[in-house]
Length: 333
Ligand code: IPE
Ligand code: IPE
Ligand code: MG
Ligand code: MG
Image 1 (cartoon, rainbow, N blue to C red):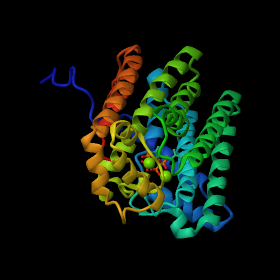
Image 2 (cartoon, rainbow, N blue to C red):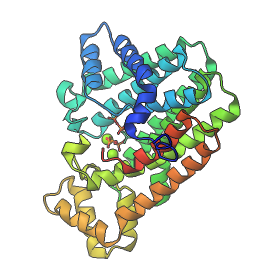
Image 3 (tube, rainbow, N blue to C red):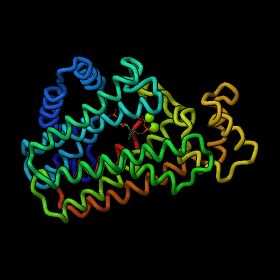
Image 4 (cartoon, protein in one colour):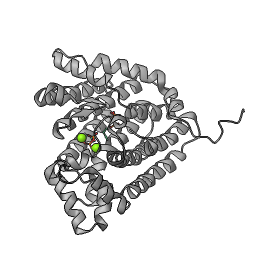
């Protein structure tokens, strides 16, 4: 019994328990900092905060910081900052993608319209920077500005590729690096900086989280085909409908027959599954193992993440960061 926990990886709940107190403070901080003189912004802030979300990015900030030192008020603020940036990117992303649902509810653009949503997203971005500025730490601002520009460039690149069937694996990976992995990496780096870590620790943790972030997005794109809307909180089959050719499909298209390729092209052009049902696309994916190949690829990235974090001394936080890699690949939403 006493040895029951040895060698066992942590569960989601155990990971959550390690940062529960800090996360409560993060939620308070986000609530306090999302109040604007314009009512619409405040309502949107509350709507987003109460809509759920996994809080994976603040958890990463907290675990990486606490891996190195005890939690500080600055660490909690930085965890709030990354969640606010994440939220701002989702608001803008849903406007760009004309999304209907987010976190199981009508998305902000549906409730408030595009104009208000764009401005609320801008406000949230700036508020995140405002909070970060209070640390009076140029290294933090440097990472945040680099990150935000990377993410915006990612969205621009994605726009450029909408509706194109010829997206290569390299094109796709570049997008994932920019739109998702860069934020994960920044979370780990900001956690390290907030507790005064040296450059080497910051860089290792950044690499760990970058690999985790790539795997996270790959699995997100797999779930877009394999999950159900009720579990995912956003519609399935959505990426292709939005004109995005993601990794499972890129792999399948490498071996697909010309006729199958035409079916995919039809959905891309129509922006719906009226002529070619979603089940038909799933059939093509299954025929060429697109899902499995993408899952394997994600597994290679989490493996790299595990090796990097395995280089840190054993502690509850180190084990939690190890276990997060399984959560990312085994998740259903
Ligand atoms: C959504 O991120 C955007 C992607 C990078 C796929 P999450 O899936 O972490 O969103 P929430 O915060 O849990 O809603
Ligand atoms: C991820 O892009 C959003 C950002 C990281 C900005 P997606 O468009 O693929 O994400 P979902 O599917 O809307 O969550
Ligand atoms: Mg989107
Ligand atoms: Mg997606």
